Image (cartoon, rainbow, N blue to C red; front, side, top):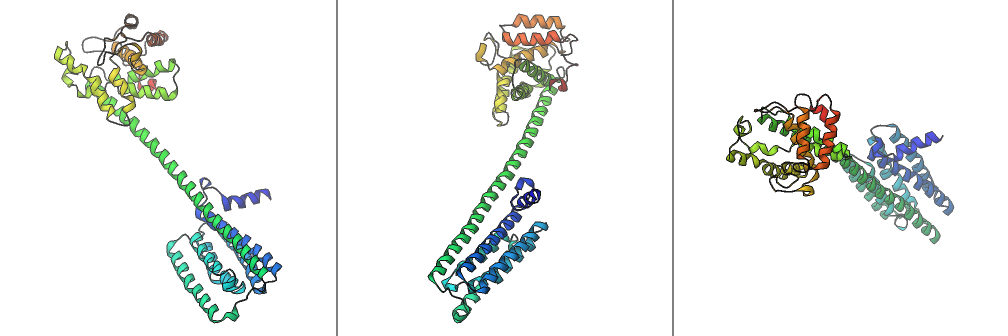
Amino acid sequence: MKKIISGIYRKIYGTFMEGYDLWQQMLNIAVIVAILGAVFSVFISLALGNSVYAIAAFVFAAVFAVICLIISMKMKDVTFAAVLFSIVANFVLFPIMYFTSGGFHGGMPLWLLLSLVISWVVIRKRSILFVVYGLSIIFQSGCIIYSQAHPEVVVLFQTEQAVVWDIIQSMILVSLIFGMIIKFHERAYETKKNELDKANAALAKANERITLQSMYTLAKTIDAKDKYTNGHSMRVAGYSRMIAERMGYSEADLEDIYNMAMLHDIGKIGVPDAIINKPTKLTDEEFYIIRKHPVTGYEILSEMPEFKEISAGARWHHERYDGTGYPDGLAGEDIPLFARIITVADAYDAMTSNRSYRLYMSQDTVIAELKKGKGKQFDPDITDVMLEIIKEDSDYEFREGQFTHQDAV
């Protein structure tokens, strides 16, 4: 029994997230209100000794509403149940209640007004709604005109007490109906909000994928300019992530530094290929041009909202811990931490990659160079972390030709 009641409750008042149609829920709630109102009216009418026709109308309303509820719960398309409920309410039940409950002296024009409200609430298809609503106005206007011309057809209340109880009954029904409408609007808002939140989440996820793919493409484009260091950006990103992971950073921070390092050399887009791939020593003018790439990269990334927060790596990865680097001559902890990590990772990859003028260095030489630059070119603590990683890499896998994008992530 509990399971059956729970099933009925879910069908009447289930949530949108469970796959229930909001308009069907609205119809079900409207029918429940009609059932409660009709049953309540039966008791009031019996207590007041109202016309047998009024009592019969309320009983019929309750029975018919139960039938409509069953139809609504069993059918996938509830248009039929909604239209049927609205037609009988507009053209049968409420006119009978009007004629048997005092007419102008009773709930008029409340009964007729409520019947029209029900049409707006439960009929989903506008074309059908306008037809039913228009015909209802014409029919009910005819009822009013007819009752005015033939007052003898209206059953009047016999006592003031009956009028008072009718007013109380009307207030309760109006409260139920308007409470239902307010609740519906609240649920409609919640439903739309849930839909919007889901759409925004999906859009954010798609945008994140696009952004990551864009960064990966940019990194590949940068590396393609230098035929001697293809894959450099991805390796530096991988080494930077390894260092940050050893330093205890969160997964979100690891993603940030990986992306920052992946685009640290984006400024090289503005450097001529002839300079990047020159096998001999650069002239002062050429060196000046290539030294501009950190600022160029920073300006490029700062112009793009998706990449603005990762522009620090592009600007400051050539700063030195002792303050003799470029472009701003920052020193020590004035250099952003992630940029200091990238500096070590960038230098490590430069030493472990083949160049136009030499092959990659031996692991012992790399270790010696890192120790030599500790506290001068590199942050001492970050250098120690990189040295730990190298110590564990006994097969020298972290170098060009061995370290892959998959290793990085």
